[in-house]
Length: 440
Length: 169
Image (cartoon, rainbow over all chains, first blue to last red; front, side, top):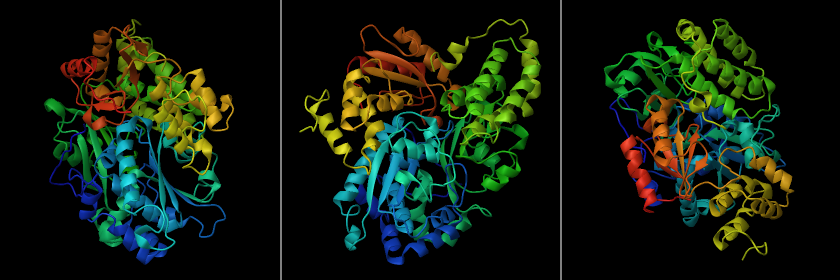
């Protein structure tokens, strides 16, 4: 069972109820639960959206789009029913923050879903969890059932005539691609989880053809806290144009890996050295993948940067899903880059040729390099392939595979070249099957 | 009482499926979870499972197979009673995921996607299971086991061997 960690620099907003038994609905209510949704019912949609806008909350799934603005895009009038879809298909390597929310505070996700529904005029919400999170789905299912039993969900919620809201929990069956919003809708409609062409955007034509708001589970879980504390107060916790706090999962070679809630803009260096206790076993830092495996790598001397969407973009990388993966000096970047691309190759849905073929060729080339059969031009080839995937696919998976690859070969070109030089004999070190799994 | 006569599923699962198709605006939405739950009940997605699910959702079998082939957790061959899934993705790799996988291979005497002769265990190397901060990690059926060491893996496998492990489904 995942263990909770803590550090004095943490600011507990989303994590306020973690470890306090808030999976129990009575305990949740005791800890100010379901107060925000009642406030939302009393104040109305405009107030909710304005508060969310004032909070500066930006989508926690990775893209960082302002949440209040997203909600305001949904047309007020619609012939088709509107929906809220919570994306709990957390699959980006390095990311395990939603795991902790579902485990410790599932009612916050339910309450957030209701708030989003009230804001856009939807009467139905879906909470979609990846298939591997079955034990968490059971926790969420129970929370939903408890909320129905208390009259919090269903018809005339909290006794308000005509105010109805239903929530359906849904399970995936193993596909990273389904984390992309339009693929998520396809999957929920019982199809292969491949992306849809945009426009139309989900806010206008989404689930079952109705206007749909899709938010990451962490974004949704933040909503009740924001309504209770006020948008401006929440915004103040973070940095400029990056309101509030977020959950950062720090993993890899650190002394105290774990999920920590830190203010937006918090120093990456401090997150690694203070919060997570520094590099494991006193070794030296080599590199950091700062926001899940799709984010371009930072070298050890590039970590003096604030953890928010804008500062990370300025540093040439991304905040992504907040999964900070720390690599010590012993890691071979060649092996790490291969393991990263092997994931995207496996998870490419095959819809777009640049992604399907590009990830495959990069994996094959890097495998040959790793096995000692590489030539110096392979490094150029890998970069060329990755650069030609960028921006040429329907969904961001192509970019998610290309961006880290480009980062690895640009920043660690010498290591790739030295590796190739040092393994010229061509003796396989390990077979492909052994490295990335036969029949994957 | 199931709406489908002669269901191949257990009465509990059949009742669950009867309910499942009623909760969505479109029946077909129940397809992905239904395949997953059917697999838990039967052990894998057999031809009979495909036929019955297609009938329950008013789909043709090809629709079901088309979706079935897309998702990595769905299988068309039986796995062991306890399906051991070891994560070797980046965060787990950095903290010994491959050593854990190798240890499982050695201990169980099987490779990736193979089943032990007694049918008790199967082994899979899987992509990220969302336990990055508690790496290395594995799942046995749907139970998470994290912060693994080879010693801990031995204890966990032994627990299941003796029928004492949890079996979340």
